Length: 175
Image 1: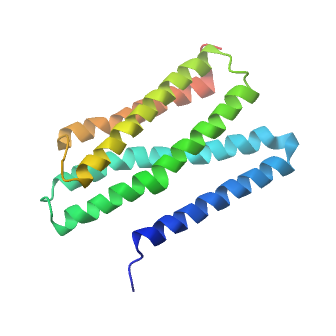
Image 2: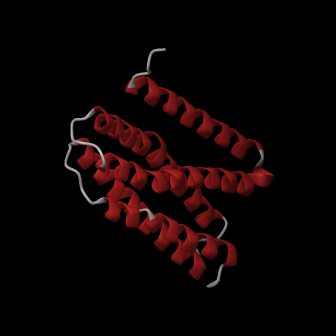
């Protein structure tokens, strides 16, 4: 069986993303009464996808560090890291922001201490995403950054931020 090229994988991911957006838009337009519920569902789907990538990427870096520069395994990890970032993580982050900001504006009027704290935590999560994107580029150029211990600790950052975000959204302690 022939292995699909990077372009073919990106095309499939783009088609899947377009279908997701089209379906979401159709549901959004067709069901005005439940618009908030549809946006919230799409937001949760995007956040889960983004979080999966944020939690998996540091593990890939740890495994990547175990292999010599230029080895077949190292080259495979470069492809995996690049695809995870560009095909899953970044689109999921963008969709999370789009749907989240829509809810913040349309549903909450951008008011509430809990919402502002949540946005600060999501900005920190986006910064972690940016740091990992930079690391993907550096690993891709065989300029490895961090140690296995560093990436194990970095793996905890999204987890801690997710806990804060979930508590702020569910409990709304500063409403």
